Length: 340
Image (cartoon, rainbow, N blue to C red; front, side):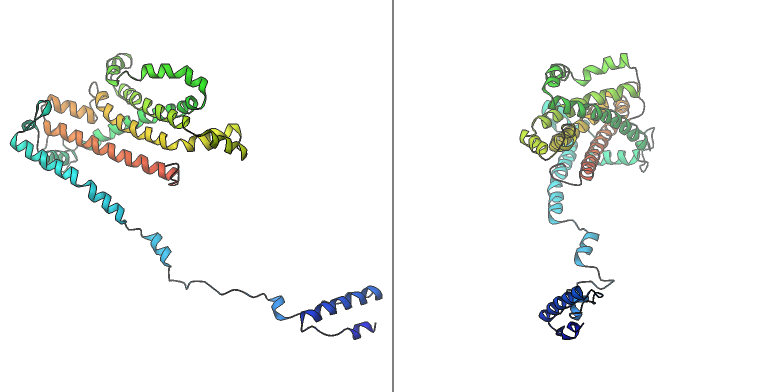
């Protein structure tokens, strides 16, 4: 028991600490007494040093947080807008000048029979309910635009639901491609306008025939672009995914679809534009509400301002629909450049 008093008290240095621990350990082993409490080295062992504080005072947002809250358009956005304005402005000026001077354009176009841009703008305002023309078409814009939008989205959505899976299968499996490609190439060249009389006979007048024609117009661009995108996926990419543990059943939606997304989106945009083009054909007969029906009725009444106004509205609707589609793709893919 005298070893406890003989142990050097060197708790002030790390060397003395290790010596005291070894001495105490040997003493308790030989004596069989209770284990001594390990000595304390210094204050820094129980309270480790903490690095310099980098907290920000409350109520003072950082510059990055402020930038995230308010994003002003950059110079590229303003430059793009400025570059896009001159062409339509010059087009409107030439249009107005050609109507007033009764120009004769190629293909025998008599501009003297066209309305001026101001007259078309007045007709659009009247369709929206803010004009002063006051005829049977006043304030009917939402009715015509809403009916046409429903038909376009119905036919386009059905085409996308069928064309994308079929395109993936045909692009991925050579047997399916060899079986279906001749039929696709045989049916694709038939114009939608040729389907219109048959559609009226087998489906009848109404929304069904218009939606079916929109479906035909949108189906083949989506299908062909999907097949092209899937067939252009590098084989090494699929092999690398398999080496990393991707199962064969997961290759389609984990590798093939993301790699071919650019081509698929391109097909969707083309198909959406064609859907608005063919809509006028589908709404010319047997339909009383819709932009195509409005243009047909304006033709029968020789209202050129209403015809051109309907054309402008269709163009604007198609432009907005394309922007919405691109925005949805960026939202779903989280703006990843390899997908969107």
